[in-house]
Image: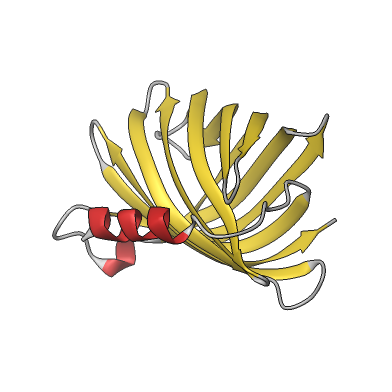
Length: 185
């Protein structure tokens, strides 16, 4: 099912205009275990701030910070990096490398990640995206990440985001979802 969802998003993104890399968004997030038998009480919930700033045409700088709570414990995560967008006729391919840190009790560490994303403003006020990447959080785990997202922009600079990601690790598999608002500039 996950592969079908990912492939449908890849095909649906091959439609229209180039998306913006100048934005800030604030999202409510949830993170849980993707293994069978994990209870719904295992979800961590929190808030995430994300931004991107374009410069020199296709280059952009990205930043993300999140605060989450899991079983009365609080944790934080941040990452920042540099990306490049390859504009094609009907879609952008964006690649980025980032460095970040997770502080969550015993599951704390830092490391590098990479990500490749397809983004397309499919209709006038609607963008679909799909991505694949890898995180190495030393000494916690190494994850292969992939996911899908959408952005609906009813106005010129305001939008609503919805995202779903899966992360397959060496020790644990996770899923994450986010719903938020975005301001493009």
